[in-house]
Image (tube, rainbow, N blue to C red; front, side, top):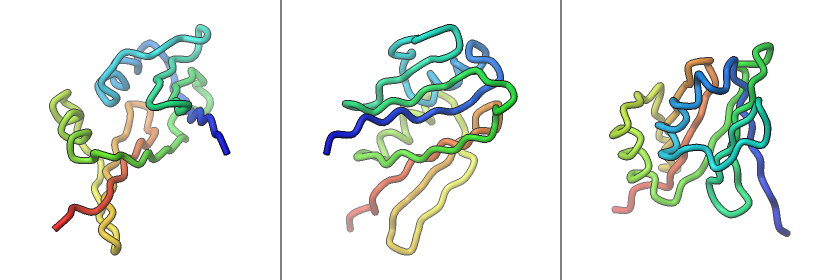
Length: 115
């Protein structure tokens, strides 16, 4: 089954928060479908977008599972964003969460470290 995924995070002001997401995701948006949204193409048929919707801002949460968790986390750290929380589950899966300026929570999960 083919699945296209568009995950949305509501923000107060798209243009004001966009630089934070550029640092989190390591790139400029892939495209702007309209005056309220900015979209990042993360992988084939998988997109994350922010949508300007002040009345809903700060109430979104999304978690993405990464193939190379450590490299992704190192890249975010190099771009100057600070981790809000880190967890390791009983099965060894790791999760790191960031919080955008509006209060949305963006999590990244990674498989256990081998060894």
